[in-house]
Image 1 (cartoon, rainbow, N blue to C red):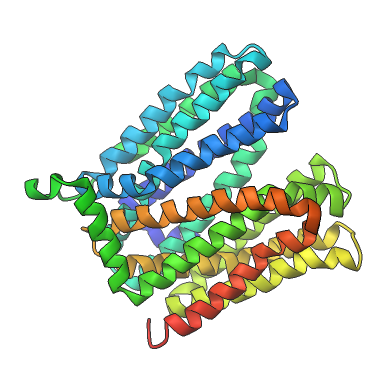
Image 2: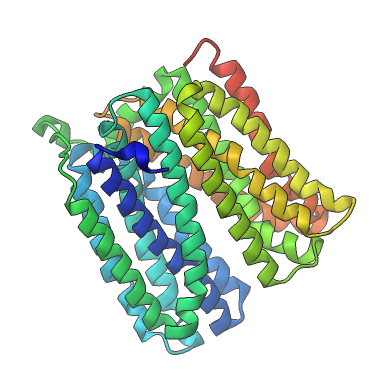
Length: 401
């Protein structure tokens, strides 16, 4: 699947660094989510960890986007990884439930760094790929990287904590971030420095990014995608574990197995889109991928009304990996094609801020609404928003590539 990257040394290094770094993120996230509940037995403590993750992403996304448009994106990514490697070490001080605040602090601090890495990666990648067909292929590979990181990191997180405790988790995570920084150090591409006059006003830069979005019908559709899917992802992130437990009657083992099936499906889907995607227009990948994704998710959440057996969940969540990869490749290619290298970071930062704000609100709403309305009606929001996105794309991207 990586054969198409021959001759693209910098792209290979960037995707490799992303795989290692994002695996570290998943190891940390899964390990801490498990350990904080084991230490405290408190869902409030678990909620605090989730908020510590999401709030910095929502608040700092736009700031990170402006910053990466001003400097060398490669250096920003290296700095973000080295900072993350340093910030995980306070975990070795945790001894009991009274030290749970240290876990929340580490999560918050690493989440402050994360938007800078994400925005820099999203802005750097298109500058390394010369044509749209190559961009679709690389975006599909990037989706595979994300799913591979989730599969590996989710599996390792609990194992690392079980064997080495939080000290082992800190050490393993620090190694992953340093390794990612080393790969990035080998990239030869350098982002052009911003003019001195362009460095003066953060607020003006942010406003310019908003203006770029408002002038582009394509980017307005992409904004709708990020906001609507933020609502869906926040809802699913809150209710999928209760769905497996209460609706399917499963255990934590079943929950982990279904998540692994989701990651495997995403990897296979990414492989298919890597091969076929360059022959399909980004608009079609995005629109029809979103429609198929939404309908399959609705089937996943509604089938237990007929029979709460677990096996259809494995099949459906794996199959949804194909349209998921199509949506990712399509929307990223549309975004990258509609932005210039000068403003790509600030536009992406605004998109991620809006998406994470939507996730925060939907996380709270899903928790409040699931009891009076039931889990199934509320979690169906995840599928419904993708169907709405497909409709928005059909209307908003008419006569577009």
